[in-house]
Image 1: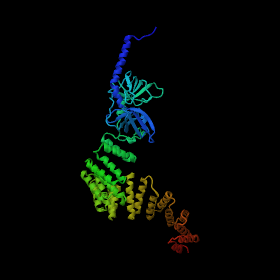
Image 2: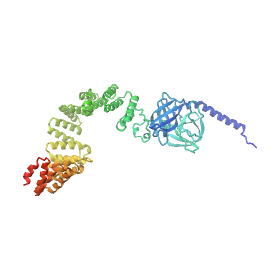
Image 3: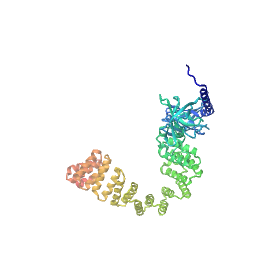
Image 4: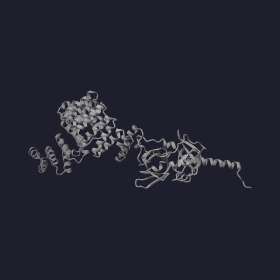
Length: 560
């Protein structure tokens, strides 16, 4: 006997499917218009992936899976009308749940309608595939499981026939509102999986995106934050961490997005100045001033740019309008706008470069007297006094610079101990200079051969001979091919009557440079003083033959 479906049940099922078909017909056409194919490419133009996606905003904002973006340097979308558009930038991504938000270089775009609430277990769900110039058939399924990876998001397991090309397509509720993004199905898996669409739409550009480990997996341009303060942080970070091309792109994006902010023009001007395009840099600085925002910082940047140009650029490459007088005028305007000590410090530096040492000193003194008694300002004032020949005041100012630090000293103090050591040596205060150099050595993680030689000189002049010998040995250990160090070592060894050591050192010098007269001079002198006058005289004669002017007088004094 043939089994039949009761007429009433059949009618009910037909009504149910008709209602579903009618419901789908109302929204399917609109949803289809929001979908597209996403294609991503590597730097050599090879296709990386072809997925689907859909618009979530009216200005080209879209979402899709993140997988095809990995390793991609370019991406395009082909919309439901078959029109191709470039992907402009990526806004954010979640690698764990494989979603990305990005922006397409399109005009106005039709977005999907987002559901106000998530689906629940056993709810009906719809999957909308992508098609060109037609409305595809939506696929109906059932939610079999709902997980919550975060408090506000859901992850769906769906009983649904999902094609291999489903990745990135929208998953909808009965009202045609999008609840999820379909994940690319695994081979042989009969279920479908969807990530809550809000996990993608909630993604925003972050200020420190250059350090984002997920976004670093794609070479596509990253979006700037919408908040100008956060975007400015991004811009500043890029200036120290990004390559020149990425920085240039970020600057142009910033100017386009925030045309009334001075920051973009200042950043571009600095890049242009580094590239030698000084006239273009100047135009950008003038534009930054015209914005009327952050004028004191703009004038400060202008002054620093011109001052650095004068300080480091070769005269023949200098941009004529950028004079030190121009820099001084800019920093004066910065100070007028906002009387910050930093601006006076720059003014003092400019005055010093103009060789107006007395005026520069007056600015440093103004800073110190007004509560800015920093090591830098004391040091700057000391340099001014050095140039005017007032060595006593210079040393007193260096004492004040060092006194701004207290024990245990930090590495920041090292340059000031070095400066005072040099000043003390110039005034013949060798033991005090050695003390400063000892502190400097403790503060620096590594010093070179030149340091040990300088301290050797100071120690020799104040008769700290053992310390001096230790330092000249250290200098040689840092640079054992420097013949001068061997000569200095042999000379001191003779002076302190270490004749055998001097003979050995002189021989090393000869082995290093056989035509260096110093080696034979010190070898011969050490031998004579030790009592071997025959050998000593012979080596002094050799030094004389090599052009040493002292050899003859030593032969006459010690060779008889």
